[in-house]
Image (cartoon, rainbow, N blue to C red; front, side):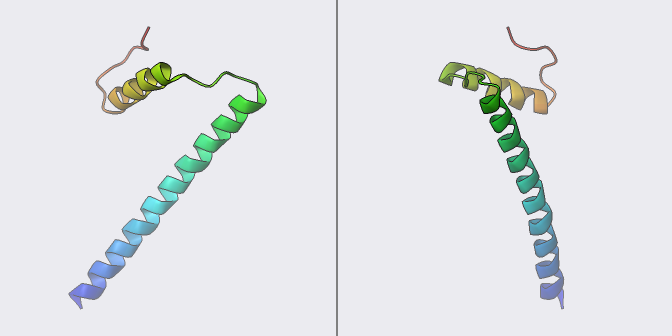
Length: 68
């Protein structure tokens, strides 16, 4: 009986995780298509690294201000 409950809980977790991942994936693609349509220049490697660090720190509440 306990194995069935564990399997159901795991399945529910997987479905919730999958929906979250799919939502994030679609949102990111929408932003990228928008940037392409508006002919914005894609970020270079240094800019990408800087903004990824900022996003990670901001997600955990470690920074408040935008980087220079």
